[in-house]
Length: 83
Image (tube, rainbow, N blue to C red; front, side):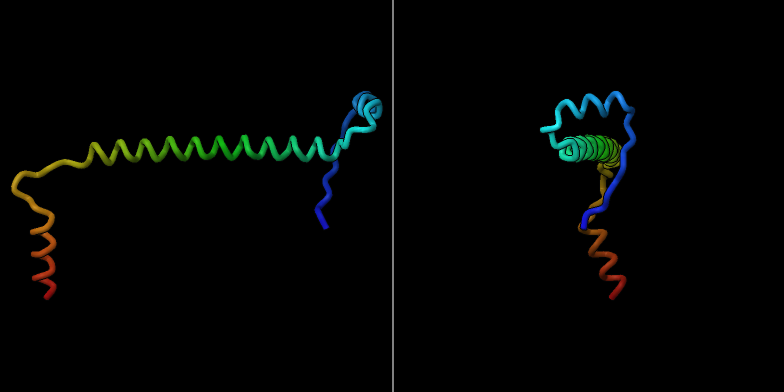
């Protein structure tokens, strides 16, 4: 069974809704809620994308070449030390 939520509306709005009794107001409300949830998820995704872009730019700035240093040689050296 699905959970039930209640929404209070003023009398005038209810009278207007009653004029259109053929409309499934529960479905209208469900769709509005779903749409709002999707909008909020999109905002979160956008914020996450901005954070990823910033992190990527920081990583690019931190990455640099050091003359005379080889990552391959460094790995080999540590493996040799480790035995």
